[in-house]
Amino acid sequence: MRLRWLVFVFLAFSFQLLKAQTNWFSIDTKTHKDDQGLRQVINIVNEQTNELAVFFMYKKFIVADIYSNTGENVNTLKLQTLPKYEHNYFGASLKGNIYTLFFKSDFGTKFSALTVNFETSGFQFSDKLDIPLKSEKIVGSFEYKSKLHLLTTVKKTSKLKIYQLENFEKFTVKTFDFANTEFVTYRGFDTNLNEILKGPNGDPSASMVNHGEPTSLETVTPYNKVYLNKDELIITNDSDDLYTRVISINLETKEQAYHKFPKLSYDKKHRGSKSNSYVLDNHLFNIYISKENLDFSIYDLTSKALLKNIVITDKDSITFKNSPIILEGGDFQHYRELDKTKQFFRKVSNSNPGISVYKHNGKYVVTLGCSETTTTSPYIAVYGGALGGFIVGIASSVLTSSFLSYTKTKSTRIECLFNQDLSSVEGAIPENNYDVIDNYMNSPSDIKFDFPSIFKINENYVLGYFDKASGLYKYLMF
Image (cartoon, rainbow, N blue to C red; front, side):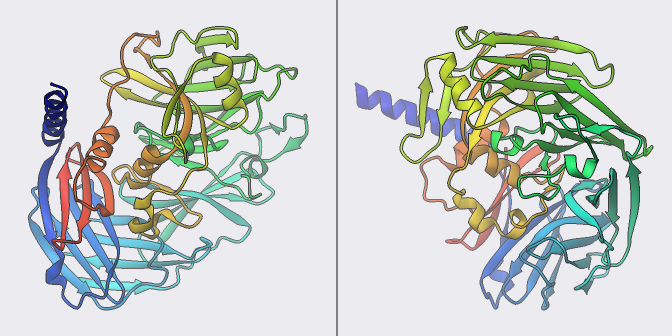
């Protein structure tokens, strides 16, 4: 009887996986010939035409393909020369069917570019982009309206610069000066924006967050985060426990704004207090935690009004959670549950606290907790240079790095559900698209998912991967 039940469960699980994904199309890499070893696969979604450009990076050449939204090949080019720094791709700018791919040195200070014109079957290289970054530090990069942008800070000032990279030789730059804004440290000393945005290594840095997608606690624990919400670039800073600083720049109107949101429960007597925040839609979600209490707050970014405030102590039950207190990841035990609130408080306040939020069927799915360093995902090693170096970017359609981080993070957390009115609601935490793809990749099979890529096209999530046994690069829609 038990065996029959196990067979039933296995068949039901397999059926769910089959229902969850469909084959889109495959690329036969055996036609590339003269194979010198595949090094990297770069997928770029053209959000203007819904076409997919694919660049197979080999040891001595590149094969560039472009496919329609129905998976039909439009054109294929073979390039016998590689751009400099080809192992560190970090974004692209598009104009029609002209694609410019940008690459960087390991330290993110030098750049190269490759422009491919699928209409004329021509291409151009530039091993040196003349971007004047004197007295500037790059915070991160993002793709906006099919153009790659660099966000920098100017040393010893409160100036931000945004570079729009058009192609291998042309760029524009816009400066946003917050010199009239008062920046003060939690000890009361005057400072500037460049100092505020400094990360653990002493240079300005930020975690680049894909707005609206499930996000790992590992991604959101840094104190500085950058979000792209439609036309608005939002920078948050939680370097102290007094308040969250929010800087916003409208990329169309060039309007800029700054505001501080208080952390209401802050008390210097609290032991081990830490805090962090997350932005989704027009809300700022805030967590302040110590060994004695937790404060979860939600603000309206426009009106600055406090919309919700939940405060509990280590002796209270966490009544608004929809999951157990989960401890997941690590070398010895992949999953276990904690019993007491004070255990959760101690774990989070002793580590790197974070909060992440996404929406599912109109409800907010909120994760509160902390992340710890874990073993690098086996997929990252075969994905290629796009995850390496010091520039990490936001791309609205290509989600590989956020997916890998989401599915491979070691964390202690609780998960919660809130409705549109921000009231806590009962129910199980829903399975999101990342969960579905991860379940598929971890299902029992002989498939090795080499060079995986996760992206969105036609409102569908797509998993691309190289099947070495068949020589096919396959695409599955979820």
